[in-house]
View 1 (cartoon, rainbow, N blue to C red):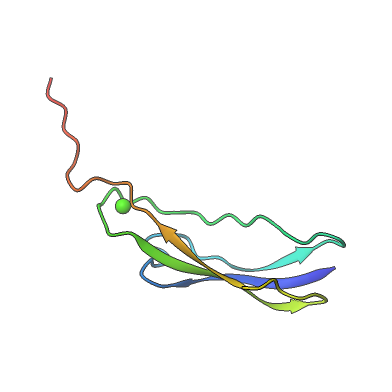
View 2 (spheres, rainbow, N blue to C red):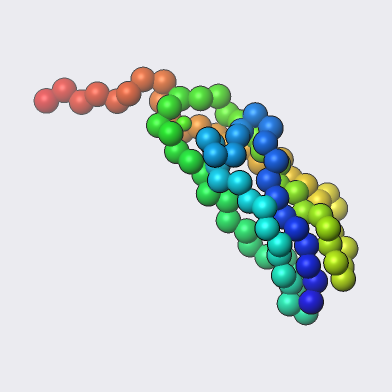
Length: 88
Ligand SMILES: [Ca+2]
């Protein structure tokens, strides 16, 4: 069994505003080399510039972290600058 920590770090995107922070331990069963980790995004319906955050793996026990052990995640805002109005 292998253990590692996974966490997010803010860059221009902020935990609690743009996404829900991840900070937990991963447990790898024997022969498992990858796991899926879900990061929840927060949709605020406000037009903002695209923003980035980091996902980082460290404190690996009984194994070796892949290289690189961090990824820069880009959030592309899909909200428009003005609210959509519909005339009826
Ligand atoms: Ca937005």
